[in-house]
Amino acid sequence: MALTGVRVLDLSRLLPGAYCTQLLEAQGAAVTKVESPGGDPIRMLPAGETYFDALHRGQPLLTLDLRTADGRASLRGRVADADVLVEGFRPGVMERMELGYGSLSAINPALIYCAITGYGSSGPLARRAGHDLNYLARSGALSLMPHAAGGPAIPGLQVADLAGGLQAAFLIAAALADRGRTGRGARVEVSMTEVMRSWTLLPRAARRAGIAGLPLTGQVPCYHVYRVADGYLTVAALEADFWAAFCQLVDRADLVSRQYDPSAVGEVQRVLEPASRAEWAGRFAGRDVCVEPVLELDESS
Image (cartoon, rainbow, N blue to C red; front, side, top):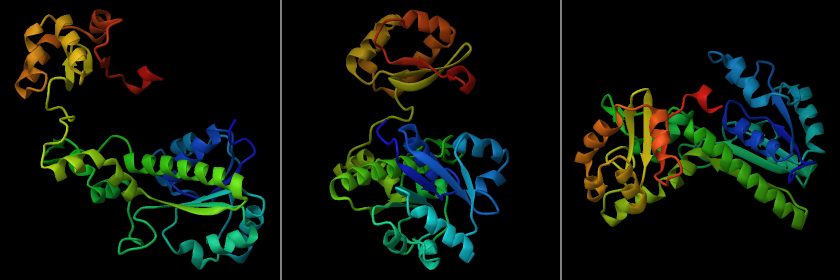
């Protein structure tokens, strides 16, 4: 595998860094999870041990108190033969313990050091506390969510955390590739707010052009979640030919010209509601219509 032999020290906490190192591990890297004596804060959440195990199952665990000289000395010893270190402390914390990139790269010049932050390591928000929902809010991404009960709906997944972990893994892989050419390590940094801001590229482009953004939050019949007899069905027939095929298969050819007409949502709902997910799956089998059932977690495993 591409990262076989790469040794990773994961000093991060909660989800972003853990997801990053899971991705590296899936490509062959050997990950050691480093915790403080109090444990990763994810353990303290309701059912936290379940989440910790899901993120770190099978990884060697190392407890170090970095507030002590012995703990810091032990980490420096580990860094000497590590390839990657991932941390998610607020900016300045590692430096105050003399464990920042400058100090650790003096021990191991080939080290790839990845800092995952909420708001970056500089600027007025750099040291501000935050979590996934805050980063979505500051980036503008939360404002794009459908509104429920008078405000933007909170996504059911920690999007900024996962996006930050994915970006971190990408930057680490790129730095490892560059190290293969130069022999030198590097410091890479992720701001989860900036990652989410970059994910708003298309809505921002629409805003600058003075046009409405893509109607992808349930406003139009060709991109909607519909209630059916035993659950829900997703229709994502954005291309005209997919939508036309869908309309033909539900015996509503008259709706072909109303692909982006919000008033047609109710009509499609009335067509789909009486039958079950399985019945519609049979109807659409083998046809390109971009229709799939909404599965519960135990159905999709």
